[in-house]
Length: 272
Image (cartoon, rainbow, N blue to C red):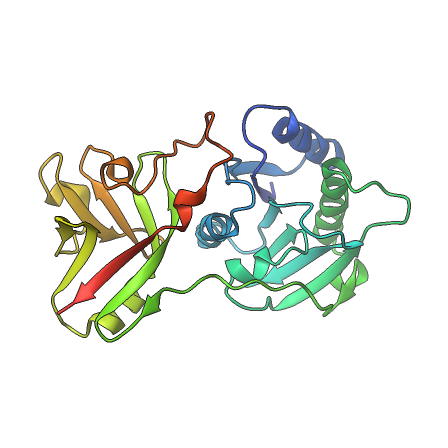
């Protein structure tokens, strides 16, 4: 069965996720649908890029990926069919794809939205699944949409650095309230140059060691490590780092969904 991953910002509270799955199976019941997440914070391109960037390597080539995030950010008359590193991606033309892969995809095809077709989630799903199904039947992607079209581009924000420190932006706070920062191990090592460092959380709270896993520190102790996606993560062993260090508290649902300013805070690492 062909693999189809599904990522969205629809949340769990209404019918949209189930409706999209139903539409997929109605058009092609052979897809093995794998949910990545449906709790991407609305309008948070940084979090969406981080989550989507982390998944492709976990699936075999020739997998299909449906990414319905910030679907109506652009009033274009086309959607994007992407082929990149052997994967097929269906995504709106809203700039997110260039953040996910940190550049321009290998192949881009514009799937037309026919005149008179309403710009709805249901219709977009149908266009994507019909294209994916055609590819499975042997149709070349270039027969499905215009190749090499100009697309909207957005850039994944890079950490700011000087000789003495690197400042990263919070990408997301996960369900364990761990803090994920947009500093990769390669960026950290290049800036550190073998020096001692302090990850400053509060005036009197800092971390001076990179751990490999939670068990390296006692329960209740703070730690920093590079997660499976290669990004700096700040946590507390069997505790909650984000609220303790004033970096925001968000569990993925609840009455504060509209206020996400805490995700744009920064974390500094000083070198000495």
